[in-house]
Image (cartoon, rainbow over all chains, first blue to last red; front, side):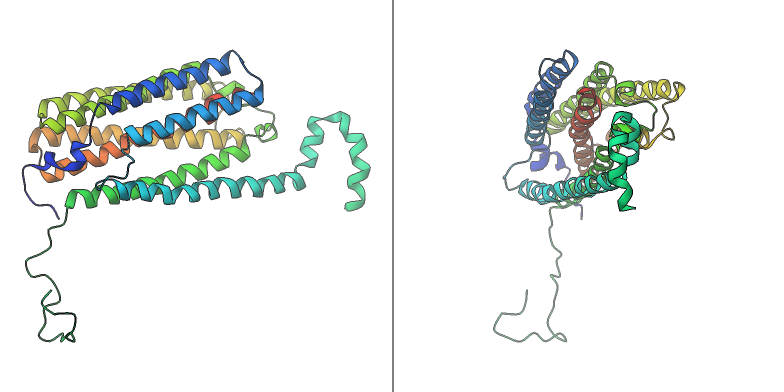
Length: 133
Length: 212
């Protein structure tokens, strides 16, 4: 229901807007730029690089969540925050279960393509696979 | 309600609804509903990222272009700047709304709109270039997953751009009525959410792929 108050811009959700948007912008640009420099110049080992850009992305997402999407426990926003928190297990499950399924699938079905990619292994693997068929 | 807790309810005589009508906070109800919709949309992104994750192995490229051939992180950082600046500009429009400044809102959204269009041009140019090099979605499972994410994200920007266009017209013609204000708030949720999605796009598509 909408009531013609003509003072809708006084609504608490409108009043949430603040200079935090600038903070989110600066942090996002700097950290994404840092990730780019790290990856472009291969400044760390592959494993450390992957961890570094993941950490950087996590910080940016949290900063954007707080300053752009106003995720907090205030009376106005608590249900927005709560809904997001309840969705996090769903994100983790969707990604995790897919990874788990395909990890098993690839182990069982992708033997031939992997051997084609690595011809040196083919000779030694062939007798191992043959009896199973 | 007209019935006390101790007395049984007689549906023939008792009034079971509030005759004067509830005074819901219409704006808060609508933004929460829209936020839940955005989270459902995030679930679609999650499934697309999950598909991309399992299809990004080298053998899914089917001998065709791999991530190092299709992802250009320096160019994509330009796209990052465009989308984040657009989000910031919409943020300034929201600060103008807080002051009740019609002009401030229209200027803020207009700049956000132009930056959104610039992003689409950059994205479109990159995609056209890849297509011309034979890297199209039908080439391999990897490229299908890659372009699904790129196109799904691009579609959001297209929707956002049209929505901003509509809101500029509505703010100019109707002013800050309840309806216009809740639409501006929902568009803020929608547009600012694209910044969060882009962080994942940039990290997992454009940067992650270049780490051997």
